[in-house]
Length: 487
Image (tube, rainbow, N blue to C red; front, side, top):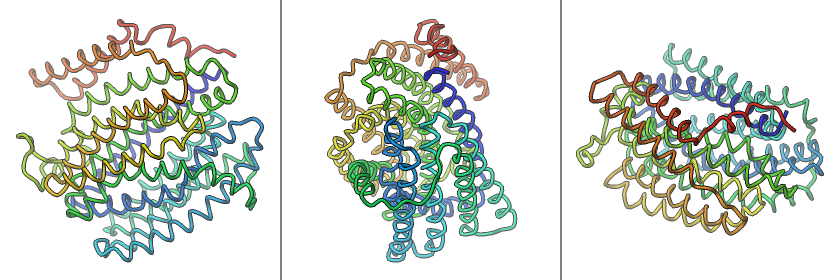
């Protein structure tokens, strides 16, 4: 099977799995928002937003270094994986243990300490599982990662619904996450035994080498998380749990959408790394195809979410979140979860493209070049949040996210251009814009004639795909490249 076909297979499998897990997550969020209410869901969101900072410390960039290291044919996959998994276990225990201790000193988190401790255990299992995901990704067998992920999510959903039915509190519900993530880890270890024979290895010399390789990536990830998650953390400190609760559902939708480029580039990353190691001339073609795919998928995501934001929030969180607001209307628009989602999706559209440039820098082993730019992004984001959140709350946080993502796209593109000869053809942009315009018109006419939003959405996607085909943004040759067998 050709590398192109393997990437396509892995992407399709992940899309199927992500559709399943996304539907599961939607059911889960719908159940939690209706059960916990705006304030209670705000506490739930606060716990995971707080722990996400420690999650990055626990990861420390190990995942992408692992994928890059085992992509090198000269390295022993058993030796590399065993060392990194042993190291990650030790670091994870220390970091997530510290997260619980630190929470005890934060007065705003009084009453959430038990929940933070349980969720920290859950995230430790998730962090360790990502090591096996890295192995599956390198072997282009993400179907196995998909199976374990779906299994874990089903367990979480089933247990959560059971606990809600019998009136258990938030802490008990968080135990469902811990158990589901533990099963995910154990299943990954079982399926991954074919590719790697794990045994604890304490090679301090190799660990030193890994730390030297990962610290720039760790700094980048920490800074990245600051400008991606600090808004929720700042809302929890500067505002109320209700503000966090209103912001929570739109941000969950944003996270789900962000999985599309992350999933795709995750499959492409090992291929790009191999091309770079081998100085293969196919690198430029691979990057062009990746760029075109991300551009083509970003446009409909942007248009659809903006057009049907209200029914999405109604489905995901319930009618309470459609009307709940703590600030005055913005330019005549009610400052609810709906408006927050419409703003945040613009940030996602920018991230569809910037993520490719970030991954390419990592594949080149030049992640240190991302430190100063990401420090600037973090300072920019935190400063703007400090200025906007006091008056505009979650709307200010959403606007800050959009401006930050646009800045990231421009800067990372410039960084890549300095590191590697990358002459991307931009002709697809015009075709996508024209197709997007036709798609928008469908929503406009559908609204005028008061058609069902599901019918309008399906019709708009058909029009978009047809327009891309007629304009040759996608063609028979592209489809055959994915479907045919090759060397």
